[in-house]
Structure formats: C-alpha cells, structure tokens
Length: 469
Ligand code: FAD
View 1 (tube, rainbow, N blue to C red):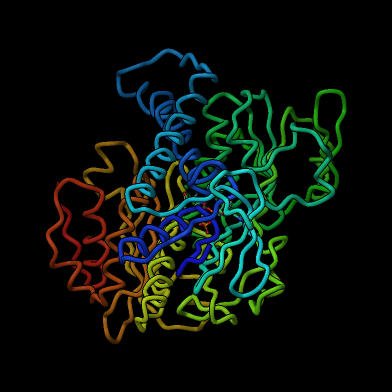
View 2: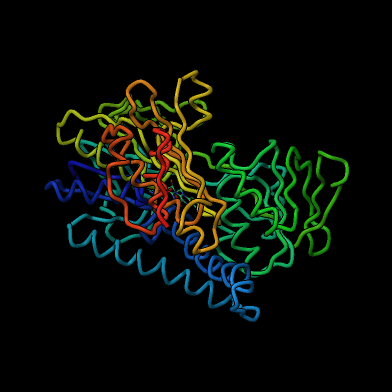
C-alpha cells in the first residue's frame, strides 16, 4: 500500500495531524498500536485525571468551604466503582467520538505497531484485518507522534501493583488507606489531590527543596499551603527514596533525608518522577532521524527531522510534554507537508497544574527572566482585593504579568487560584498578539469575575488599579 502521508501514533498530536491533513485533501493512514484512539492524553492522562479531579473538587468544596458559611454536608458516600466507571465512560465517549471523526474524514486507521524498515516504508505488526497483505505501507511523508511513557526507575520496579505509575493510579483499583507519591511534579500532585479527597492519607516525597520546580515560587506558595493541609503536613522536601520493598501487603519505603522520616509503610506508592520519550523499538535507526541523548527526536522549528521524509510532533519532539503543544505542532507539520513556509514560534505555550488552587502560566516566567538576566517589570494583583474571590471565599490567589519596561509589551503571565487554567488563555492570546499593557487595561472585563484580575494586574503597572465591588 502506498499513501502520501502516514501518521504514526494516535494521540492528540497524531490524530490532530491526521484529521488536519485529511481536511486538506490528503489521503492519510493513521497507525496506532492500541485498539482505541486518543493516546496517553485521553486514555491515561489529561482526561481521566481531570474527570477524577472534578470529583475531588466537588468533595473538597463541600468539605472545606461550606461549614462556616451556614451550610453543612455530611461526609460523602464514595463508591469507587462508580467513580471509576464514570471516568471510564468519559474516556470511551471521547474515544468513540475520535473513531467517528476519523471515519468521517476517510482517515484509514490501522491498529498495529508501526516499525520503520527505511525512510519511506513502515512494516505493521498486529492482527488488524485492515493491515495490508505484505504488512507494509510506503509513504511520501510520515509524521511520527509516538508520545512518551512514565519513567519507572529500576530500583522502584518491584513487580507489585502496589507500586504504580500514573496509569496505575488512574486505574483507581481502590482507595488505599495510605499512599506515598514519589515526585512533587504536576502529575503527582494532581493524583495526590484526587486520592486525598477520596479519603486516602497521602504523603509526598520530593528530592528538591520545592514542589513544581518549573513554576514561579510565588505561584506555588498558596498551593503548597493548601496541599500541606490536605496531606496532613506530610510533604517531605529535600528527601530521597532510597529503597522500596514489599513487606506483607504493604510497601516499605526507606527515605534518605532528614533523619526523622526513616522507614515507613504504605498501602500504595505512586512513582511520578517524569516521562520519557517513546523513541525506541520501532526502527528509527533504519531512517536518517536523529535522536538526542534524552531520547527526543531532533527537529527544527518546522517539525522537520534529519530525514527529509519524516517529521515529528508532540512528546517525542521535545519539551514541554503537553497535549496542546502536540496538536499545535500537528498543524505546523501538516502545513509544511503541504508546502507552506511555517515555523513554530514557541512564545506562549500555556501550562496548567489542575490542583486546587490551580496554577497556570504562559510566556516568560519570573524564574526564567532572572536566569536570562532580562529586565522585566512585574505587575501583581492579589485576589484578596477581588470582589469575586471574596464572594467565593478564595483569597489566596494572585495574578501577575511580566512586562517589558521599555516597550510595555506583555511577555508573560502567571496565575494561581481556582479557574487559573481557564483564565490563562487570555494571557496566551495577549502574548501571541504582542499586546501592550494598555490593551489589557482598556479591555472591558465582566464584573464580578476572577478574570478582572487580569485587567487589574495590568493597571498596577501604571499604579492605578481601581477595584469595583
Ligand atoms: P501520546 O498521547 O503519548 O500518543 C502516542 C501514541 O502513539 C500512543 O497512543 C501510542 O500507543 C502510539 N504509538 C507509540 N509507538 C507506536 C508505534 N510504533 N506504532 C503505532 N503506535 C504507536 N497534557 C496536557 O496538556 N494537559 C494535561 O492536563 C495533562 N495531564 C496529564 C496527566 C497525566 C497523568 C499524564 C500521564 C499526562 C498528561 N498530559 C497532559 C500530557 C499529555 O498526555 C501528553 O503531552 C500528550 O498525550 C502527548 O501527545 P502525543 O500525541 O505526543 O503522544
């Protein structure tokens, strides 16, 4: 079989590329090794975690906020089977939807593992009857979107399902009494938030001296305070897990750090210490594609690899490993294949941590500005001064802009507070459009909303923030 375009991998990078190319009139073959489309994001990442986090948020709001406001709920009755079933239904609805969208566009989806034989031929392993008889597809172009997988250090891999990666944690086999999360990054904290709200006593251990090391410290502070309460003070910073072993039906963990922690036992352990690009075991070495030391495919700003027939997008193509970066790169790659002269200018890829409170940022961060020695003005608006934040009892938030003091252009934005993930899109647009602060302050924001803090923070740059209550 010959096709102008093969897309390898059916995650948010791969299916977006296949759909966009088909919309442009190209014949597309999409090869995905799993029986369902959606990739890590839909099947074991973004979507299941957010379905569970929504349940967690409803529980925490009823537990933490309402008693002092004159409304009290009794403790929630949690059916883990129903919580799991709802999450699985959300996944299957969306995955079925993707199948329909592929069919509507005449994208030929083949279930099987694609392996490069050379720069223009892929062999397909599997049992799908739609695999061609000679098991090969030749192509003019291939977009590689094979994603990433969770890192499991060999000394943590003790062959027990009590030691889980993020996929195991999302499976929600039970609500353990105790759980240790190894790694204070966004996946560990999101999953810790889910389990803690369902009733698990969660502890977090982190090697460095802070949570979420990619985010500005002033954004992390309110979250760290909230999590400290949620996890009963059991966040161990500057602490290393030395060894893990099974002791009866518990996992015994030895900490190397402040002596007081020593050895502890948990019902489950979640290892969330990062993700690795999936670049091995499918014949990239038979092409001219280059892979760097970290395992990412090396590509230019147009997603081209060193092989003229092959482009790469998504997690396999480098950091940040985020679904919306993958689908944006899909647009770039398809346009390049169509002969357009496009590059991906990574100005403002928004990042969101869906904890409570949420943290979101886009563009330049304060830490990055310091590291690069860039002169920026920082305009901050604390949510305690927001009428809406007062009304919902969430005063811990803040909104800040990073501004070029000479041109007054907005270079970056950081937000912490509930709904930060929804609010950050305004910042991404402002940065992409090259807005100056006046554009923010002259834009009428609806009252009373948390999004007003975007305007108010801009006003503080001129020393004129006017709150209306
Ligand atoms: P993937 O989604 O990993 O898809 C790759 C696909 O390729 C897979 O389906 C795989 O089966 C297939 N494949 C691999 N090799 C082959 C082969 N040889 N032949 C055929 N098929 C192959 N990102 C966000 O933006 N927001 C979030 O809230 C968020 N939450 C997350 C939560 C968790 C718990 C996790 C684990 C991740 C989360 N992510 C989130 C990250 C997000 O899932 C990834 O960035 C995104 O899925 C990357 O998309 P991709 O298309 O590059 O790869």
